[in-house]
Each structure stands twice: as C-alpha cells, then as structure tokens.
Image 1: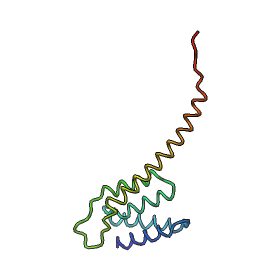
Image 2: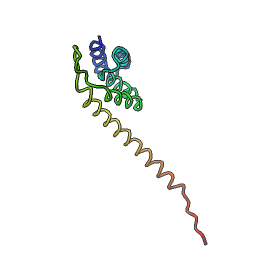
Image 3: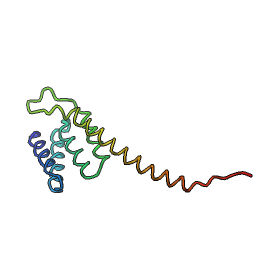
Image 4: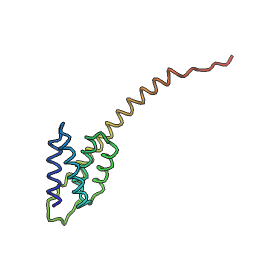
Length: 125
C-alpha cells in the first residue's frame, strides 16, 4: 500500500509543474503514505518538495530533515528507494538552504544599505 501511495505521489508531483491540483494531490498522497508508514523516508521527501513548491521552505526543511532521520529498512519485503534515505533529501536540503541564504543575504544587504544612509555620526567639538 505504501509503495502505491509513494508512486502516485511522485507521479502527481512530476505532473505538478504549473498544475496546482496535481501538487495538492501529491501532497495528500504523501501525507497518506506518511500516515501509513511514518518511518519510511520516501513520502517525507515528496512532502518536502510539495512544501517547497508551495513556497513554504521551513516546512520543506523539516520534511527533508525528517526523511534524513529515517533508517533504511533492511527487512522490508516491498520496494525501498534507497536514495530517499540519504542522497536525495540531503541534496534537496542543501540546495534549499543555499537558496534561502542567498535570499536572506540579498534582503539584509538592502536593509544594511538603508541603515547606513540613516546613520548620522555625532562629532564632539
């Protein structure tokens, strides 16, 4: 059941480019997968990608970090997508944090520049 939810979530995420309904379906399916097997990383990654697509980077970071905390199931009879337990969430997490850092740096540069214009040094006679 979990693998079917994961595959359907991944398919909807792949089709979601510009399609909000597919993105919402991917999110719902990922959440159902998490509800079924919360210790599996695959749906946590999909959920993180959905949050990122919604413009909610902090929720995406939380989902990717949760995926990274999951242990690779060794005794699972079903399919296990090993990349979702380390490489994929790590890559997505680093890329997202870099993007956030660039945006914050850019915004802080603007704020600092405005502050510098407002500072009037006091000279003592």
